[in-house]
Amino acid sequence: MNGTTLRQTLQAILPPEAIHDLARWHGVVERNRRRDVVALVVALVLTVGSDDSGRLAEAYRRYLVETPRRAVVRGSFYAWLDAPMAALMEGLLRLGMDYADHSLPKHLPGVLSGVRDWRVVDAETVTLRKTLSGDYRGTATPAALKIHKEFSLGCGCMTDYRIGPAIEHDAKDFVVDKRYRAMGLVVDQGYVSHKLIRDCYAHDVRFVVRLKSCWKPR
Image (tube, rainbow, N blue to C red; front, side, top):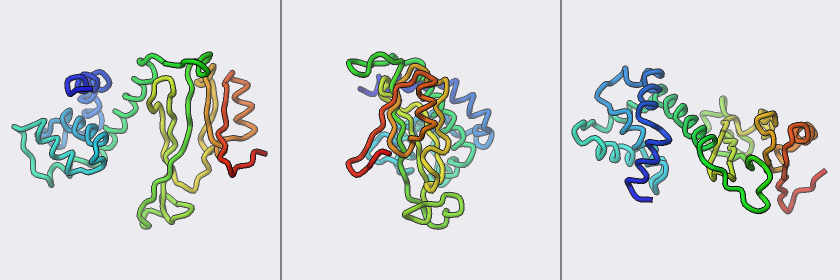
């Protein structure tokens, strides 16, 4: 994928009009009209996919390249990354996942065929600073959060996510309902229960339970 294709893909998934509309909704553009909110979003998205993932300095440099006539000092740039901006990025993430889920064709060859899509549900734990243990209690560490991700095998991308304290059980908020009808589901043992199996049969959902070598199904 070259630069032109990447830009066209970003514009298809996150049209500038959608970015501006959400920015106005969350009050992002009201605080500082000097910022180019589209260029800011592009800089943050591209930085996440680079070798410098998570480095705000790299996002700052990308933003300056996108907006050479709108120079901003580093401190002002970091001040833009506030709660309204976080809400904007979360809303755009939802738009991107909806685009992938409803607009992209599903590629399900061989044993994957026969269903609308296969969804892989899994969780990843991220360690946090101890001071956050009041909001995000961990298990092996004082503070940690758990990211529950839903991945589409047909699209090859994430279609949903949820973030909660790491101490919560994996299956706390995961429900198999009519939105999974005629799909396939791949989960690990942490999500499995008698209720989940009953719901899979009730909604015509095929399911595969992943077991590690040390796990014993009961």
